Image 1: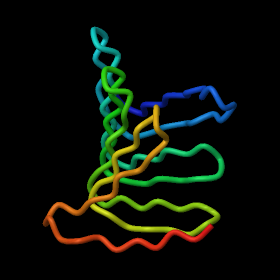
Image 2: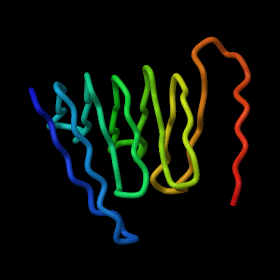
Image 3: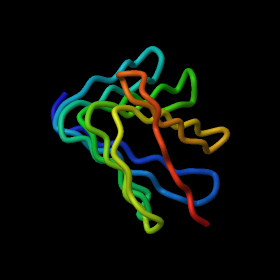
Image 4: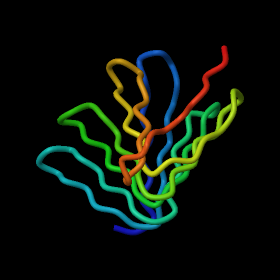
Length: 106
């Protein structure tokens, strides 16, 4: 598919919009695979990358390849970010298995 767009209404009232230049949709498992110029935003946080896999079977999103996450609290660059919709947790990692240092300020 080209020019993919998915709108997700979250339980807490947020609306997440994910767009990309290309991608695939698995009709059997309801999984989305976004490719090229991926942008995901809920209005407050913007994530840019080359790839994003939205897996309904795991209720997770994997964002990878040149990831940039920006919010009002700051920004970060990483190789991969996994987001768990149930726990609302980010797991940030690098492909070279090196350590990632992140400082969160509240």
